[in-house]
Length: 384
Image (tube, rainbow, N blue to C red; front, side):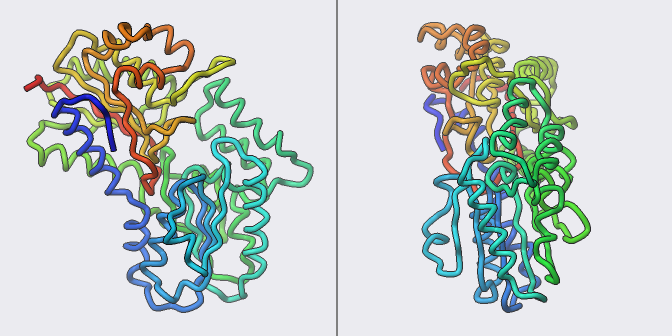
């Protein structure tokens, strides 16, 4: 995990971010959820989503040799050798954020996996955010182009995740509760890590676990991560508060709100969570919603050396970039201008990542093993 500016306050924000991620680690949370039920033989498990590999590892830890067979569908680079080398596992790569032929292949493999599951078996479905595009079995007559259209509409129109996933469900055989129904005459249980407001199984993964055929247990969500960050902040001696509302809607508008609240706050640290949107121009640059929010915030806090803001995704990937997000401070805008990146023009071009790379403000984590949404820390603390 890295950001390149040498400032102990940045290290403090990164420690809080690490504490939040650890609290919702997919391996840890699934292992804890299954620990009371260890010892059962012949369990089949299917994991889909950005946290799929970590969740499957948690199931393997808890069940041991009782986990007879498994299938993992995850983003490229997210499956460790520990799973790839396990002879019980079939590991597939799906596409995110847009489905492609790999996503359809994963869907066909899931159909075969379900068909080969013995009646009466215990089946674990491990689902996390990102599953909507990584894995798909289209409804009859639905083309790949049609499957891709809802996401393309979402980035052009700024759709919220609930509306986006409702459109996806209408095009799918496995979403909207179709996945558990494939495992006929089996005891199907769902373990879910949620990245959506309300933690609704009908929305996570576009409803892969929704419906009457599956008992669903929530094993990790944004509230867990934010609560852990609050505890860690108070242990660091900060006067910290967790903000009650989730951020949503336009990312730049959310940045203005956070910075306004920071200016009025009596606390040292405000902890926010949520998932904003960015309306992309026809030709978009580098970065995602967290980097966009952070850069917009940099303009708001310019000239305030006591202000810093971290905005980062819990999955370690912000938009189409490899960076999790960014940490900005009261001097970020000056550094950006000196590097040739006027902030308002860069925001209009949706190219925040290039500017934040030039200012040394990007945060990189690699795969985190979880996905519960975005975290924003707004800090007011004088430099040492």
